[in-house]
Length: 275
Image 1: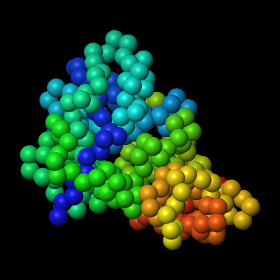
Image 2 (image 1 turned 120 degrees about the horizontal axis):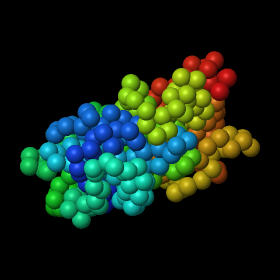
Image 3 (image 1 turned 180 degrees about the vertical axis):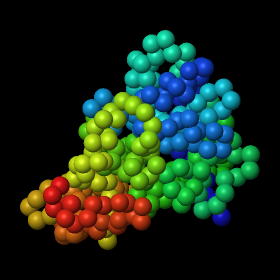
Image 4 (image 1 turned 30 degrees about the horizontal axis):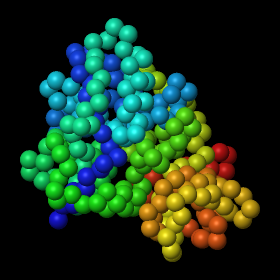
């Protein structure tokens, strides 16, 4: 049975104008020209130094691109994108009052749900939905949070703006980066990170035998090897050093266990030793 959850922490930016695709194409990590009705693209906006600023899903309609984005980052996204408008014929508008973002999984999206597209990160993730209002049959947001934590899918709130590298957060494996497209903001460092194997830590799903705290440092012995980014019950996501994944890990007195998702690509042991 399909589960549909309303995601109140997501909003929508409308990017309209004849230059909308070319404008966004030069600024984000993915190929936004692949967004068509029924298909969306997941991408990231980076700093010029290649650090994470925001993530969003790009939907296409006949007249605009609709960005399913973190609600608390929308003002910052619009401000940052607007700096690059120059003579581009584009208009950026916060349309969060007109669209309610949902996720659907465990089956096909409901008929007449609104604007729908498969989540491009993983087939198991389900679908994204932009509807005129929150659905009456929506599950609690916590149901979707448990779903994505089990799959190891990152969200804006899990990442550190101006610090996290996109490769640390799985954008490479989760189809958030197009390696063949032309230049975009932060492209040089992102490519260098991939080809030189510079990633020393990754966002990893973890579990514990009792409820996790909301935050905390992760240690191996007396060594700090990571940080808890988000937790719900006994599930969480943590930014962990790769060279500590096979060690005994704790948050305070609580033992935690990394659960590497099937999609995660890690360097060979010899490569980790050199990182």
